[in-house]
Image 1 (cartoon, one colour):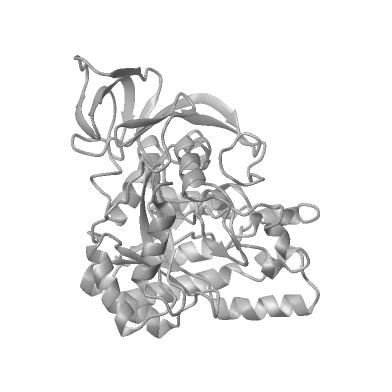
Image 2: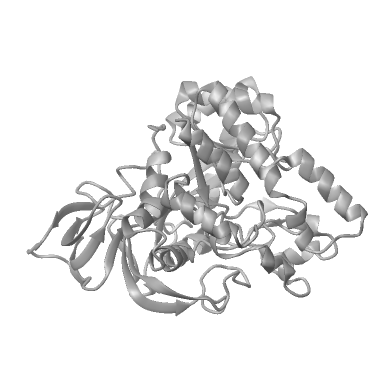
Length: 459
């Protein structure tokens, strides 16, 4: 199929120009000022931006956690992602204790096959490290699973000790993989949680109050130190605290290959949300938790000056009814996570570009290009250039929409940004040359997405 997009303003991480773009089958073949010729579909993108498709490298679809399972599976989650302008995700496959990494990968591949509407890859969560697991890490890198997530939190469930973390880091020095780190001091948090519950402090806000910013900063510092000793890069996931950002900034100022992402919730929500009446604060229970409102500008500064390299979502939705309610009377039993896969691009455009905090090319870099480079997808994805996958978004910067659970496509019964009006909407979305969102309507197909075999790191 040939699709010709005319008169749009094409935005990449390095360029910004008016032009036309020709797609043939799954590939961008030509970009020029005035393209002519036959096409099966001509789209007039006048007064619109043409972006590379969004890449969300932190999602949790169909994930068991806390006695329940995240509300979006690979069908509903990827359809919602498409509505929001995201054309590729990297989810997390979990190795439970006693399992091999390959068993975990095969389990998650089955969850996605026949359901995903957009392309997908996987990071591997390692909860148990042995000599066999280290060998499996090597094999997975050759099979296109080139990143591994480790936890410094959740003792007895996900948390690894420092020796295991260091061994995994050393292994990536040999196989070219990348370690993603959940950086919170799980031992300290565990003590604080037990102390709070013992004092009868059970409301949702105590989830935040028992996970202090300094616990995130300490773990971030330790993770970077371990990576420095192993002489390998490290990627800090869902950074929320200004104190943790200071650790990343200091490391990068010393020339270390330390990378980090933040998420929209840490840019637009705050601790104040935990003080909402009744049990409403449970909507915002996530780890790390929301921080004080003054943290927002520190994070935006980090994004503007490249101390933070990506904006992902940590999309892990649990409905208030029957799921978040599991923690009524005990905040430690509230399933951790919130929805965001659909709202990321519009929120960041509205709150970042329109306010002048970041420019258009930086927006593309943070939401697509930089994640693609860090996680072995570039230049196939993350840019618009001849030969790249035809993953792109025709984005109307003038159109406004109001975020609401009544109209979103995520399978969750609330939206943390309920009632917020944003300017900037993904009107048409193309995934590998197929139109999947056509003027705001889903015309794609569940199962059309493909597994993305990612390359070893080049960072």
